[in-house]
Length: 156
Picture 1 (cartoon, one colour):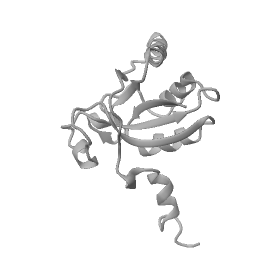
Picture 2 (tube, one colour):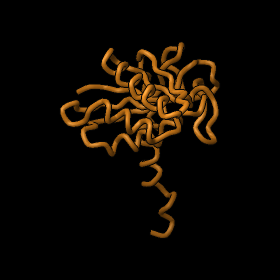
Picture 3 (cartoon, helix red, strand yellow):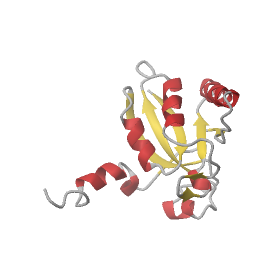
Picture 4 (cartoon, one colour):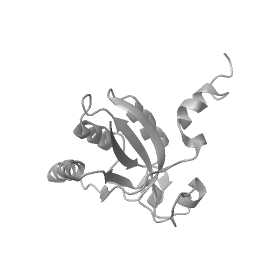
């Protein structure tokens, strides 16, 4: 198995999108790219830790290529926005690829350059992966948990 870390705004939707990709074996939401050890959601939301909300994608490279995951990443958010995605504003919502090795770095830079050549002003940060800090349990599969609760099931 291999891992990839992506920041595409609020981590709830990217988690769901990556779970749908054949060859992805697990997805966890968390924080990366900051200075504080083991940050909490509340600390990350202040913007003072430097972390981005991210997803850590575990995948089988025999079944899905890292380049395919990059394609999903760039398709599920707006990589041209700086420190925001839609209504979510702050450095924790920045577009970011945290690469694990030289191959991932080269692939991410190649996609960014390809988009730039098409005139897309990509703001995506590409940085070496540091520690992935798993988010609190209530954030894991948050949207799926909400669908199983009262919300949306009032008449069933």
